[in-house]
Image (cartoon, rainbow, N blue to C red):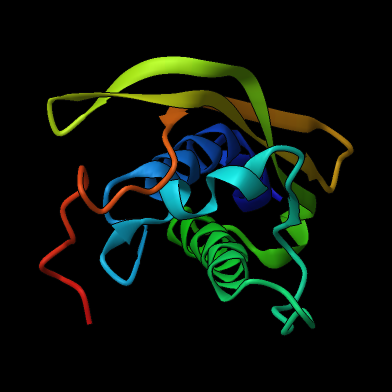
Length: 153
């Protein structure tokens, strides 16, 4: 039981690390930051992080990739913390727009975008909810302003 108790104490760290890996510059599709590509589809997006990946009929492949990446990254963070699978009963990522038409900077250039809040909520096997959130600026994808990652496949 001590191992489970210890792993529950690390759940806030798992959520913090997940948000960091989801939003960093390496979260890309075809070399471009995935959030800029999905900007119009983000508001109201909810992802069950424990669900199995399935192809969503008619869905945008970038959206499908983002959902699969979010689930994979949650599993990775969960496993790195040494959690057993039964410690987490539910895990959800919810994204909402907190404000539209905000000016931000991309590569030193002023662009108009939106502020989004990403919230991850996990319910443990003891019924305790753990929540972490972060706010990010997202502008619609513009290849004239953004550089493509050299890591592109």
